[in-house]
Image 1: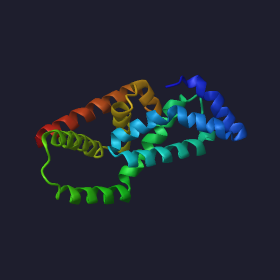
Image 2: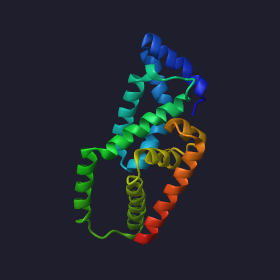
Image 3: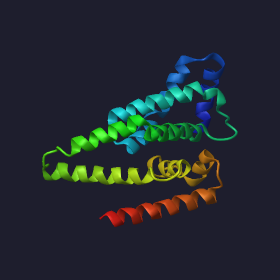
Image 4: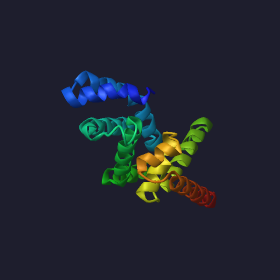
Length: 186
């Protein structure tokens, strides 16, 4: 990850001259991190690639609105990513895809040990994602930023425009709820 100040010349070139090569460099610089963040939430390679592409389109289209004094470029970019991912999980496309996956899972044959363990691990991740989806959008954003991008509380507070203490209390309360809900399902 490049430091914030190395992004600023690229951002200026994009804003002033609509510089395509600067846009490509900016995307290239941050693509892997945003893709990984998206993949850890969707657990689907193609979907993560599609969402990452949509996120960068949004970033480049709205780069004129970025205010470097309010937040680092990385924080601003993660905010866009979080909103886009939350929009996807609220969408009818997600519900349709989820229903189709549930129907196809019912017809899966028994698996060998290692594949079975991987499916169990994926199932656990899906349960956590499902639980995250039960919270309000701000709490979801806090959880996603902390768990999937490993952002620090000050960055998250900046992204959601809340005091750091509020972000921490929401995060820890949500984690506690998720843990108790998942323990109840075992």
